[in-house]
Amino acid sequence: MDISIGTHHLGLGGSETYALTVAEQLARLGHGVTVCAAVLGGGEALARARGIDAVSLDAYAADRCDAIVAQDAGMAYELRRRHPDAPLVFVAHSEEFDEQLPPRLEGLVATVVVLNDRVERRVRALAADLPVVRLRQPIDISRFRPRGRPAPTARRLLALGNNLERARLETVADVAARAGIELVRVGVKGEATVRPEDAIAGADLVIGYGRCVLEAMACGRPAYVYDHLGGDGWVTAETYPQLERDGFGGRALPGAVDPDRLLADLRRYDPAMGIVNRDLAVAHHRAEHHAHELVALLAGAGAPVGVGADGLGELARLVRAQWAATSRASELEARVAALEDALAAARASAAAAHALTRTRRYRLGAALARPLDVARSWRARAGL
Image 1 (cartoon, rainbow, N blue to C red):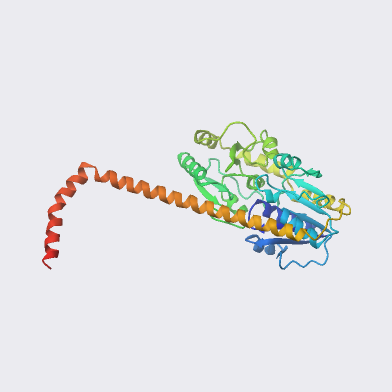
Image 2 (image 1 turned 45 degrees about the vertical axis):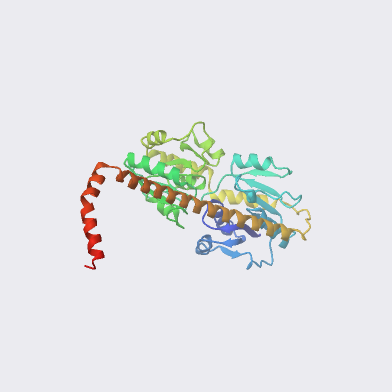
């Protein structure tokens, strides 16, 4: 089959990594694969390095397309408009962004693939009768593999991902320092990388969310679920089923991760957890197995129900505009947060300076310096 994979933004986030992982596995099976993105980002160079054909929407000119895999509504509309006879499988990654929910036009989507129970509940609650298939998040276990062993006592903790907010990151940093563990940050808000497997190999344990946790597990590292939406603690053979159903999103287990619990958990670090994690990743998340299941869905979708093409282009444009507005809003929120932090620091500095002027030592120093100030003023008036 010739398969077109559509994603709004080809960056280095979780859904983009999924698209590239699936594209590579489908190509290994002999299928023709093109990844098409409305916005090309850091994932473009990564795609080309892996031999994946990645193009912008403007440059996309596939003469033939036997099947479509779309990750957002805008690209679903656009690719279906261009290939009205190709069945479309929609992969829903998020319950947070409406743009990543499947279109509700009857006959547009053959099957919706979900990668955790949390997103499945959201899709099934939509006002649409959509076939839903639950698959597991695919990981390239050849690329993400054990390299060296984690230390017997934790020395380096890797905070991996794009979402860990400042307050939580500061909590992790403070607790890691108390535990005598070096903290390394890799992600959009830290040091970005196209090879997270190298960063994982250099750490003893990984703290993160979603795919980042699975990548750490595949690399044979102890993995701790904690990010912007909450925390569930260590991945173990016992907790894995619940954490996987939640997509390692930090909301699977009761309770919360506060600094005291995080410190206690870090002190329970055991490098043997990494061996168990590797086994779990290999047993349940092999990317090639996911590709087999996806091919079966595409091949079995049958002829799509006709959908009028006239309005699909406009719908696609509107969703892309909504994505752009969402991105700008996120950027503005980040800038406002940075300004608020700077303002708080300035206020703290001003308060400290004001408090200094009220100390006896400052008043005594000012009194002793007053004659010198008078002398300098007199010399200035006298032109000396």
